[in-house]
Length: 533
Image 1 (cartoon, rainbow, N blue to C red):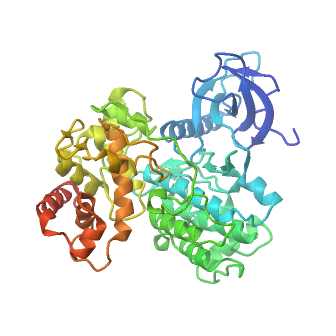
Image 2 (tube, rainbow, N blue to C red):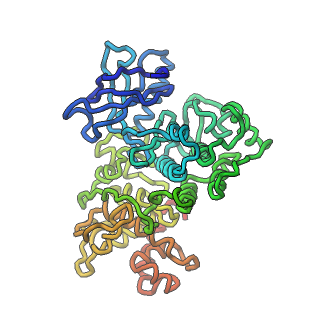
Image 3 (cartoon, rainbow, N blue to C red):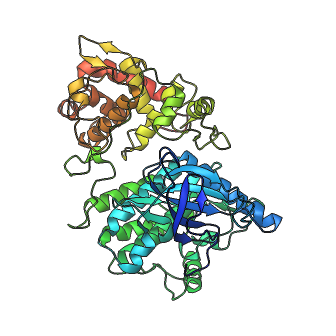
């Protein structure tokens, strides 16, 4: 090791079913090592043979230091346990070292994580302004959107916390500073990397619970990161972090202007400016940021294009890797099964109905989480079955079009089947909760936008039918004419029943489908929380 490790672990050390190999990285609160499965049957059953072990110490220190460290450990374990998402590093299991003979290791928490090939900081050190920059940034933005949708702030977005996987994809990592939102704010420890900290937090007061932060702090950090990746320089002047911090304060107070690098592409210049506003209130929201980044990446010059768009089902003209088909579950889905499909057992909704504490992984905890999940977007008191809330809300979140909402999907499922997963209309050859015809469902089953190899056979479980409905709606939405009268969400529903060409030709809902559209409109209003349109 060329630098002191926060948690020194000798090569060959055994913890759980894993054997420690070479060191990977260290930080102030933990150290990461490569590890391999110690033998047949050892290690987590879902983990590959090669993983990364993150050691978080609980050994010596003052009571205050130990309390702070335990809080950081609990935060990271809780967040990783809830969010096993495509753009967040996956955690397979947690272990505790029981080794009285090694006082510095005894009691340490160990996170068993998927192993990365490197980090963005390493890539930038070797290749400033990498050609893959827009691709990487788009995936980072996806990860932030996933965190914010779940009600969390990362709190320490920087190149060292962006991991690069063997397949070229990106994972966000290191959630020591992550904080769960309580309404519009979260509370995080008073630690941060100055270059990526927004001005309002540089002078903010630190209370008993820590420092108040918002998702807009991550948006600022993304703007700094994007400028660094695309230009090789920070957006604020200065040869040291201290000088750049002072420049950020001067900019926020209006005594200096933001001077972005002339080599920053025009589309990204607007994105970075939208991230680096003087106040948090002026910053672009995460979902809008994701749409802008996706558009900027899709229109990048040859050699800099995203290998697959953020929402592949809305851009079916681009090639992409084939992904695993959505897991099919029993038609009579329970809340626990619905939660497991998305790997978010214990994940609760941000907002007034959010439950505290970490997920237990039990069916009861999943049911509580599912019953109130997405309450800010989908009413909890109007008969939408809790078993399908996770599927409905997450399906809507997977589409960048603002008109494809959880309330719209729920309203359509109500009208299509009355939420009946066993529906079988043999006369129309339509099946399942979303009334799919097998030959049509074939085109929307896969999340990479490619058709299934064979025509599926019913029954079609909700875990398959609902995401497929979302993909189809997201594909329809941009193909409707801009000048059509009426509620655009209802027009999307009508096009689902017939086609977008038919709706465009009729300049609205065709007479044959007005009753259907009126029923969707009724339940759309019923399921939309007050204060939302």
